[in-house]
Length: 399
Image 1 (cartoon, one colour):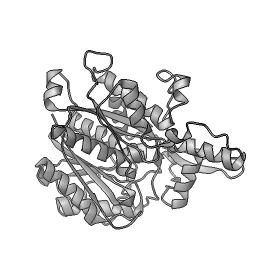
Image 2 (spheres, helix red, strand yellow):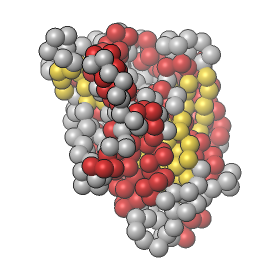
Image 3 (tube, helix red, strand yellow):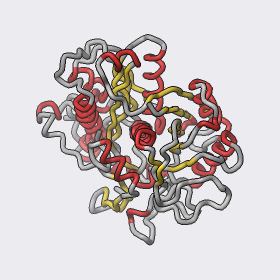
Image 4 (cartoon, one colour):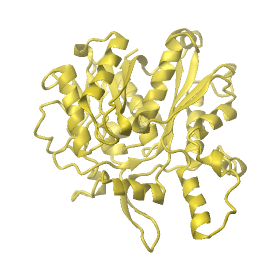
């Protein structure tokens, strides 16, 4: 994976469990009209695996996806081995594609007054770029699909891949998400939307504060996370050691508002996922919340948790790991799915870091500041609720 906390999934989980924040205050824009923004950047260098010639044909999001796929295949013993990827599918989520390429194109056209744009600008900016380059690089000739549903993109990609495998359409899918929108123009647009967090008095690293009464907004991050999803039969045949099992998926649309969340829509997704998994809400031990840190979004999600699990959500721990890795938008759901899988495997619930004063209108267990052991936990959820009202919930089970 490529994430603000690094590339090793177990090390990333350990950092998140320890509450180590990757959020920094960064300078964006030009000297003339630049500004500061709280961001969770990934320390990413594609050069070990992508040549300069290849890089010229790939957006940053595509480069991240190729490297994340290499890591995933290597970790699962599928890179350069006897297993063919001929029939493997690629299901990826991506919100904005090559936004930095589009920014450069606009700069050439409007600032330099030139029509000599990069001749491959069009394919570089497409959201399907990460999936396409993954397929080409690793010879995955099964279906190649891109899901672009804002913050729910990679959860939808994983959920649809799960369904395709469960229903017998395919045996293996490389599924996840990739997002790299931390260029100047995109950051300025997000700031103009009015949902970005302000620096906290305790420092930039403490500024992403989901569910805190003093929360001020979200922190953008970047990265790419790719999971190898396989049918139980195929995984067993090759002796794979899965981190966890995906057992349910639910999706819905608020059909309500472009940016304002709706509890009814989100509740439908969560209940649909539980029904799909055949899991009773009382069996869920942990929810990795969407929890971005916005005033409206966090309040609505807590309302949904109370509706699904009962007042106070007894017996369920709910935390937002975005408190330390920020919001990776099209890659957020994939990263959080992996963190949820490790939470189940290790019996450890990551905290909502920096949560000092929980919003007063809830008594839900929000795992403030410090993670905890949960060796008895068997089932967990991962929520992704997006702009435009697209909602997705994944149900994971310990293997």
